[in-house]
Every structure is written in C-alpha cells, then in structure tokens.
Image 1 (cartoon, rainbow, N blue to C red):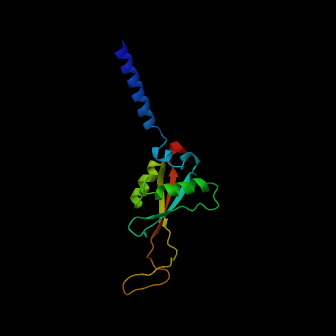
Image 2: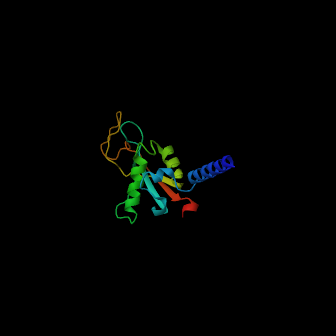
Image 3: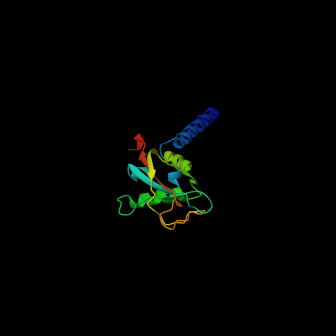
Amino acid sequence: MKNFRARTLTGILIVLISLSGFSQELSVTKSSSANINKLPEYIIITSENTKLLGGIGISIDYKRSGYKEELRNLEELLQDGDKLRVRNQTDLLNSMSILGFEYVDAYNANSGTLGVGGGDDVEVFGSNSKFRINMVFRKKEQFR
C-alpha cells in the first residue's frame, strides 16, 4: 500500500512538472524582464550586419513609445549572448517565434548611411557598407 502511494505521488509530481514545462509562458522570458503580455501586437526590429566579429546588431526604436520599458527589455534580451544568442537573421526569426511572435514582413532600412566602400569605388557618403533591414513581427494569435 505504501509503495502504491509513493508511486502515485511520484507520478503526479512528474505530470505537474511536465505540464509547467509545456505552458505558454516561455522559460526565456522568466529569466528576463521581457513579458509577451505587456509587449505591443506589432514590433519592428532593425538588424544591421556591422558587428565586429560577425553577427548582427539589433535595435528597436522605443523612444516615445508607451511600451518603452518592455521594448527596451526585449532588445536587451535579443542582444544578450548568454540568453538567446542572436547572431543572424535566422536566429532572430527563430527567437521571435519562441517568444510568441510571427514574422510578417521585412524591408530595407538603408537611408544613405555614412560609410566607406571598398576597392576603387570609394564613396564617403551614402555607401552600402552598412546593410540594415527592418523586420516586422506580430504576436501569435494565442497571445493577442
């Protein structure tokens, strides 16, 4: 009888632990301060391929936004090498999907950045040395 109770209790604990692991809340967000319920429905993330040792720079324009704090936290989460390790656009797409967002669209964000081209065609202004892309993400249906 004691053995049956011990097995039953162990089984219930395993089920409870596994259910908490499959819940809609993400473990990544538990370790950070980015909360999908407080983020806006649409987010535009700018990625730039000019990091020194490979990878991309990620920025989210959160100035004057009502979601300023949450967007800043999301930007830090995506840039943090110890958490999501976003090094390219593929990583960004997958990380945003894990966080509860789906990809909507992307468009060029080049606006004549200051830079120097290579080879014989050296341009000082408006070169394409910085390649920036804006990616639009929307909350998945279950999080709206």
